[in-house]
Amino acid sequence: MEEKKLDINSIIGFILIFGILVYMMYQSSPSPEEVEAQKQVEQEQVETEKKESKQNEAVVTTAADYTNTQALDSTQQAALQSKVGSFAYALGLQGEEQTTVTTDVFELKFNRKGGHLAQVKLRNFVDYDSVPIYLVKDENSAFNITFGTSDNRTLNTQDFPFQPSVSKSGENTVVSMKLKVSETAFLEYRYELKPNDYMIDFSIRSQGLSGVFNTSQPITLDWKQKGIRHAKSISYENRYTRLTYMYDGRVDKLSQMGDDDEIAEDVEWLSYRQHFFSSILVSDDSPFKKVEMTSADLVEDEDVDSLYTKLYTSKMPLAYSGGEINKNLGLYYGPTDAKTLKAYDKDLEESIPFGWGIFGWINKAIFIPLFGWLSGMLPYGIAIIVMTILVKIMLSFVQYKQFLSQAKMKILKPELDAIRKKHKDNKMKAQQETMALQSKAGASPLSGCLPGLMQIPVFYALFMFFPTAFDLRQKSFLWVDDLSSYDSIADLPFNIPFYGDHVALFPILAAIAIFFYMKMTTGQQMAQQPTQEGMPDMGKMMKYMIYFSPILMLVFFNNYASGLSLYYFISNLISIGIMLVIKNYIIDEEKVLAKIETQKKKPKKQNKFQRKMAEMMEQAEQQKQAQQKRKKK
Image (cartoon, rainbow, N blue to C red; front, top):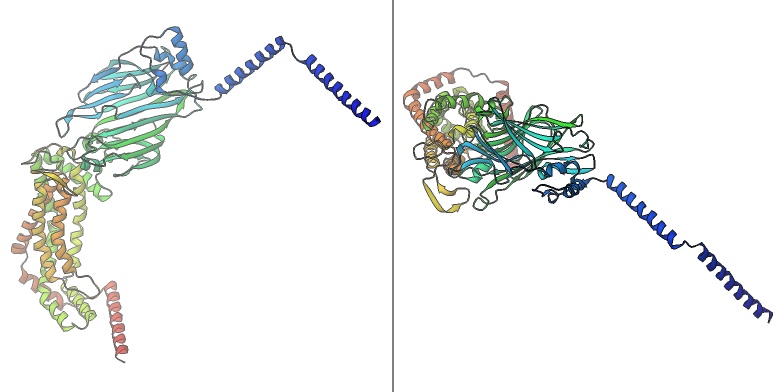
């Protein structure tokens, strides 16, 4: 009973304690007024935290925030102020959407939105279809600056309206595009256009924005542009369309075909070359510290992708000076012409692919001045023919050396055949005596090959010259409408891989001339060329070359500049003529034979290399004989 009573008492005690705790909690709970006050304190604390978070976080806006085109009332202005900060002022200003300015060489349109060029038309040129040349048109180009503000926003100039004004500075036309924060504070694009000049003096500067810019954030200039097709063959044009840039006094390029990207430092200029026309950005005051560049090939199918060739992009940081921007640049929109570009004394002509090393030097020092002089007096087709004649005369001594070597080999052929017959079972011995006879007579096959190698730099230099010669563009000759493009005498109803959808006549004529020239020269060498032990059959290889070279010319040059095919046609005709003159009127085989006999009688002193070769061949012969003896045993 006592235990039960204790249990009941314990339970009653717990109930009493619980009741006391509930009562105490009830007494200590806040009144409705206190609860409301607490909620208000908590709400204020949340709002404070949100404001602090917003201040520590950059605001990124989009084009949708800048769509106003009408005058704003105070409420709208305040709403824009909360979106774009100080630059809300610019959105409340009115103006024309485009400003058009015409000079001797340009017809330009400036977009109010973004402040940059919406159209660049070159007045003095047309494309293959007689359409004016546009380098900027239909939003193929974008030029803008991304920057941060002191209220932690990230803004882009392409989203804001600029205020245009056009004025005169002497003979020059000045176009000012201002992105205003107030009437005295703004970011300005200033364009100064000079008469008959393709270079626009362009500057980016700010005034009164040192407290608006966030100088701790990077400020970046972005320039994008798609190359507009201007030529009859977009694939041929695309082959010479390339992003080129100069850095630290050196020139480099992005990939000619396919996609490519590069990061370069200390960039002085960068060129968006579109074969015969270029858009070039020049840093006039100091090089760009770093430029990120890309090039994307847009031509996948010539029949489908027929509007643009390549997409170029460049991104480069700008620098603040005292919290403001002040960058002097140059914008060149014009022909990719060596004479025009050279006049600016900034090495802009180095953007033209003259060829590397000695090949480029030959073009710049010889062929460009020579052709410029000739074309100033003669029609362009005749100038090519005259230049070809001068080049062939200059190299005629090389042909003379080659033909002289061939004549000597022809005279020695009976003796060489006798040596091969005498030692038909000993190829090594036959080779030794053959080399000894050729050395005594001064008729080594290499004496004909080495002079021929001298023609390679000239051959390649001209191969690079004609496709890049701006002066040939749209110049006609005979049946050719444009010496800088292919000549078409017939259009095919289908496309032949590597050949094209047309038939060009000059490559056919050049291929025929090459065939007869090689038949007259290489055919003679084939008959004289012995097959040596361990060596490939050179005669057979030469035979293949007689047919392969003309076919290569016929196919490969069908889409190339007709001026280049004209050069090769005339060059091979002249070579055939020179060869016939040398063979029939200059080289007397009896005199050559008498000279060979005299040289054979003279003791021939071997040089160190010849002695070493003779020793090696002798050792090889001894080893071969030893092996044959061991086999017999």
